Length: 431
View (cartoon, rainbow, N blue to C red):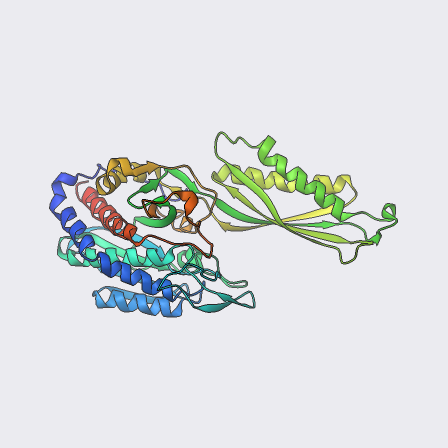
């Protein structure tokens, strides 16, 4: 997955404790500022590739810090560059900035009242996945790092990425477009990238990580089953694509349950859409199926795709029908470079406390941060956003109208981004 990475000497906190201590104190000092920033972005969310006001505000805040700013990257993305006072590596930090077509139901004074257009319909718009917190945490980290610019041993590239939730139909967007436009090649070229995702069902103060595949590759599969139309009373005069489709759907489920080595990594094949027929007594000519394939290993991904194609076409052929199978790749595996993860683990434990850094299971949700990780080593973490007096069963999951984040979790995110940056730079300076 992506470029190789050699293990550097582990971060030595004692040798730069004053700098780390100063960063942590600064993060605590600006806590309310970061919270207020987050609440502003929460109140005024925008949909993917439509983050015009969001981008303008981010650029304004970065410029106010004295950071060099580029706008219009991948349509609405913003990139800031902070050159430290000492030579050293380029480290990239990334936050996604788009909201979702969800109407907010949470009773908050800063709840979103915004509306937008999605698939031709007017919809409510909400930061129902916490991207507002990601913006605020990265802006907070930028302010902390600016405050110690003279001692900074390298350059920081702040990447505010649009359209993580997916570009509108017919458009490009997100991390893939940023990479395509050269965000990792133009200007200072980062050698590593770090990112965070808030989690509404993880307690405040907790960091979760996993080496290797941490979030799934997501691929859309589209299957067109071609039969022969006839009267529903005389099915022997045609080929029924509805029955064939049902058999294909059942057959696809055996790929994961009976043909895939699940002790290696989990996988999911789901058919979520079935379209066929216009009348109860007419067997149609075709049926269209659409689903999602989630995998955590690149080789398993290839193998499952091939098995889907073989299963669908052979079942169709056995009934005298044909099946056309097309894959539409969405995101690769979010793959945490194992060497980079091992190198930065002491940093995470020093920031959050060893008991609060949790080795987590992989999840089958997808994240387009993976496109950056295909090019350079990256580490993607989860930071807690659930009040400590709550249980996961008591709080709403992501992408729902009642989604709520406890703001007290943001300072740990700021400390994590700054600590990773400072310790990585310190390790490289000693190489």
